[in-house]
Amino acid sequence: MTGITGICAKFVVRHQPRGGSFCRLPRMLRTKQVLVAFIAVLLVLATASTAAARLRSTDASLLQAMNGARADHGLAPLRIDGRLTWSARSHSADMLRRQYFAHGSFAARIRASGAAGPTFGEDLAWGPASASWVVSAWLASPEHRANLLRPGFSRVGIGAFRGTFSGRAGALVVTADFAGR
Image 1 (tube, rainbow, N blue to C red):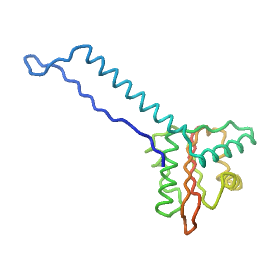
Image 2: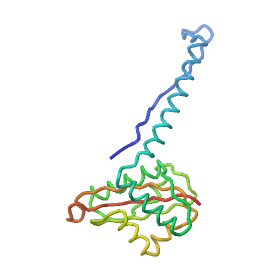
Image 3: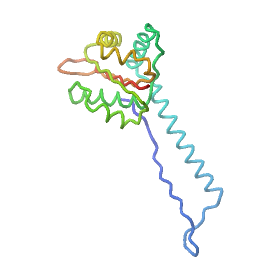
Image 4: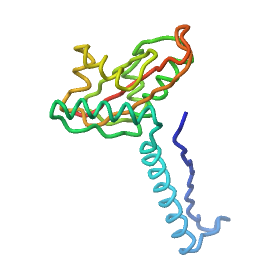
């Protein structure tokens, strides 16, 4: 499973007390520290956005099929959201690992991901399936169709994993988390 790599930095700024033993850092050194901190934050943001852009082939096939269905209904395409992708991938992996199929605490997962809303939706699927089969099944179900074809949804995170699920080898377990208005 592809993850997002992050950098954690702790910065402590100390002021020299009068008559104290702390040394003041030269102004140039403080400027460099601020510059390094700024560059570190940019790297974290760039890593998060490029990780979202790197879809695995199954996820990319699903996105293409989903956007094809939306185009057939005159809707704008969905774009990948890194935070929703993290949520969807972690949920699909958990369902496959623990052998259950349910939305579970969807609201808590979305909150934990930090994804922006204000409105969210989720579609799940599993079976010996292809991307086109998954999207066709979602379109045949009123609740799933409503999520997939909601005009206000503009972002999606997709998590699809193959493995043995419910005793069936090669099963595809899919989570699609949607966000928008």
